[in-house]
Length: 343
Ligand code: IPM
Ligand code: MG
Image 1: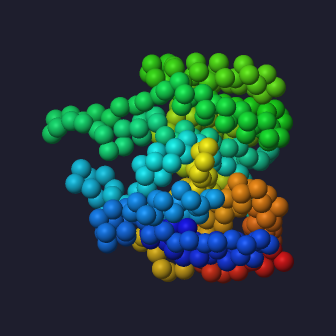
Image 2: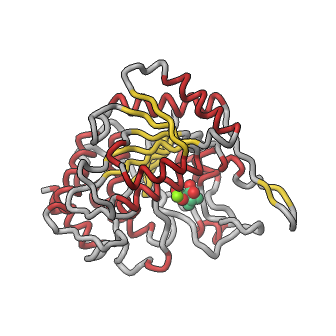
Image 3: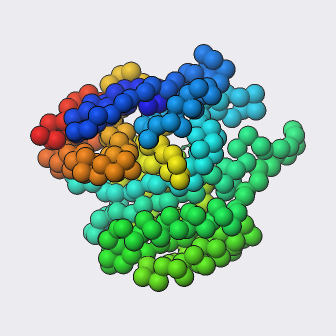
């Protein structure tokens, strides 16, 4: 576990209570200090020893990290772990379900429901430039990297995921949508071309391509059309918050950072230091990330129990949300409502 910064520790505590309630198998939990607090205390966002623990683990449950005033000399945040965990452990698929849960009011008018997954390429794209931007007082540049191997593996991941799902809410069609900017950037044309090559190996799944600007509109006007979206790192970062905004807020959105040998699970939102320690943070994103972690560990029945309880608590009104996704009744009572719904 990485408890993280800001609201992270209280969210992870909440998720661990739920994990404890559903786990009918032994779990060894190990704490790893990491993030902005660790950087401030030790001069590094994560120690080598901490990373070694994560490497040994079957999976990692991570709270949000980062504090706005803990910065590198170049102005970027010092407490973030993306470079260490996502690139360091080669966790190339960032899996972000965008699901409208029962009892949650969407900002949109939705008839058929919203239930798609954004598969965000997690190791290259524009964020390959993390820590490597160059320039001077007059100009700065960051470089967007797209490799054939990177595209192939993320495209395969997306098609395999689509083959395990039951299609888009609008029409039940299993569909993978490649979101790019192939009309302007060569790297993006390449991303699309490799995607279409991989698509030929999945004749039973519809493959389509959308430019990112059009995709952003479609996520608002016709979200029920989507089943699986696969996209570049920065686009996936932006579009997953957009998607979160259509299903009650990013507070409800879990994610998995998954590679061949390691994985960690976290909410997609940040550490919200302004509300830390006030029992105000919504723990559902962290709780649903725990369910994703259980799926990954081969404990899908336990993951399903958590998702079922969250749905029941929302449907029955024992958890109510503010329009911005914060929980009306606070972190602890939201957790208690989920525990009660577990039965
Ligand atoms: C996310 C977050 C991170 C990212 C930040 C905290 C660096 O926004 O996981 O979406 O940009 O990837
Ligand atoms: Mg983000």
